[in-house]
Length: 458
Ligand code: SF4
Ligand code: SF4
Image (cartoon, rainbow, N blue to C red; front, top):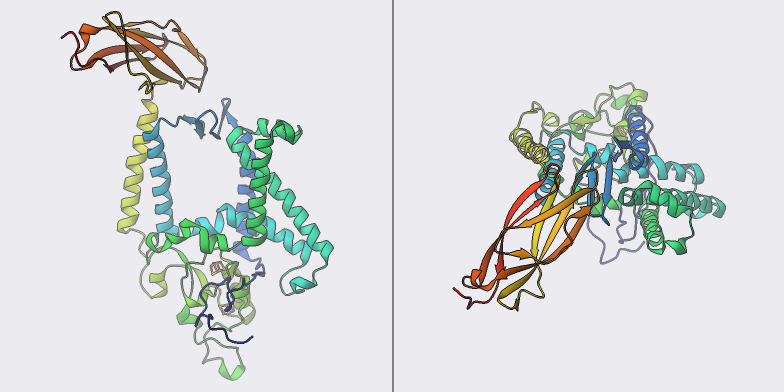
């Protein structure tokens, strides 16, 4: 290939050739100790991902993100979108939990539990190896068409299954099952979402692959800030391995343990050479450990030339588990999770909010000011509740729809038409006091300011 003016002086990305074209990776599976353990974890996670939408505790789903009804269930606890403070505590707890685990265990999540890695390495890639043959076999263009068709057919079936599972986290598995058994014309929007999501999964797992980790994932971008020199990483022991080179009897004492076989590079799903040090592309999948341990076994050297370690240990320093960040993160998690638990324990069975009706602020009728006021009631209880509203004098309620029944886990809005004598208004404002109650365990008293004429009777 002739040298191009655009050619970078060094490799910019492990997935790019020097001329900018895609460098297709076909990593060779190193089925060692870590791979076998990761495979068990991966299958447990894949089964859980499929099973969780079906799982109930006391009739409540374990996880459901019901956007249509604005109801989010997380481990059977229901959150309404209006409960922003509780959602914020939940998200802070999750985020700082991730920060803490990353500070301790590095990118363990990426290598062991991230859906991208789990599905690519333990579902799609094995299917590809089974249908097309493993690494080191034929060039891509030499693979018979029927094998490629078979691969993409299985990929499409898996993607549609995953897409249906994904959708069941938002609408429930029973609804997805019903849709699956009826013609798409009866539910075109859901059908389009399933097919669109399946197409995205096909694109990711059949084409985009490791680039999701190296180019797109924001968590990967944060690694340099989240890791420190004591975090667990996968590292190459340069002191032990260098100078690398093929072993000959006469050189046994002059070379390090690395025989430069490149099997660690061939096994790497992101196409990097771990011997160049810690890199952003490394997803800590331990494939290079498994590959290298096999080589060490063959040449009679101890395992662990590549291993789980830390940058400080590789530099000959002591591993420290107690650092500022491993103390600060748990402290923050304790605060946010305590606030979340307290918020959940002290949570009332309903939430009521008053909203002003924008279009029509007030009207004059005889010597009274009429104000439409919108009231929203979110019933958090697990059964129907009947709510009533009382207004303190001199304001009266002209609408007669109360008491109202609100179904469980649902919210309803009602417009009240309030009538207040004009002489109650001062500087265009009058206070009104509302009491909302359900006769079971909920009662809330609220003050609201009604707007009226600036030139009132006062
Ligand atoms: S697998 Fe081990 S011995 Fe082979 S190149 Fe990698 S580090 Fe060196
Ligand atoms: S360098 Fe090793 S641990 Fe990192 S991604 Fe490659 S094979 Fe996995």
